[in-house]
Length: 304
Image 1 (cartoon, rainbow, N blue to C red):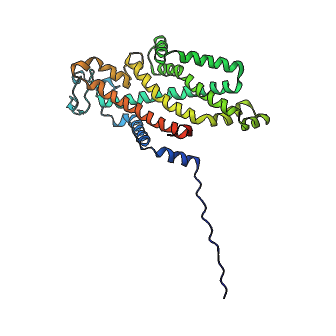
Image 2 (image 1 turned 180 degrees about the vertical axis):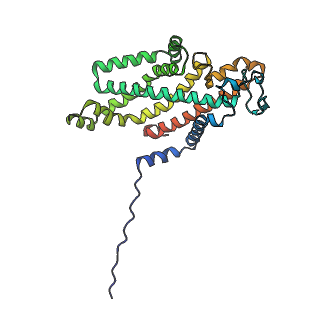
Image 3 (image 1 turned 45 degrees about the vertical axis):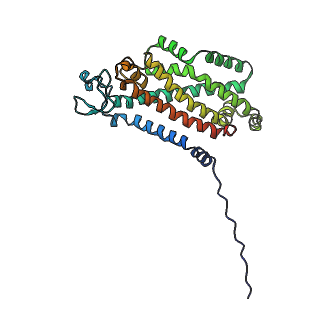
């Protein structure tokens, strides 16, 4: 009786997709994961602020001046506890921080997205066109970067006045140059590669070459810069609001909440500025932790 030997089929190795590899490399840093979870929690609090905040700080009918400057943990006239105290207008600090996060995140993310679109488009155009177009755009970038960001934003808002849209416009003006320079540097490297030459030999439209072939390969540094610029925009907006040229007083952001308690710091009423300052610090730090890990993952040359 003969027996046949069946060769065992070797197991097929599991292929890891680029997205799975990105997730695994990002999750390798516990600090970055902590920053991501913290930032997502802040976003959820900001989005759900109208439903979870004890008070609507925009509704003047809910404010009682007699509850002004109450210490944390004090029970107000309305019957609920001010866990983080109140400001000089009787506004619940916990509610003010929740709503202030909405303004800060909206201004920071909105200005960063618009500045990214403008700067990336100009950077791509400069790298692909070259010549006088490149020189003109880069001279505008150098001119923009030669001005301190806070000074340029103050000049713009001094002319336009207060308002969320004006703040977003001012931040876009001072931020777009960073995206343009970053994208141009990456695009100059990618422009010399074979796939761009092949696309040109096929007589593809310039717009398709730039946005379908060149731009996707420049996204990693653009994502990193965009993450950092969101944190920078939030800090700039807080500075402008602290100086009185940011959002209007009827829509307080974190910077305006800090400004409201600045004059009371030496009188012992620290909570009016302290807690909004902590919220601003935590928000910026969480974004920077995520951005730092993204830089290491998306640029292998910078891996530690």
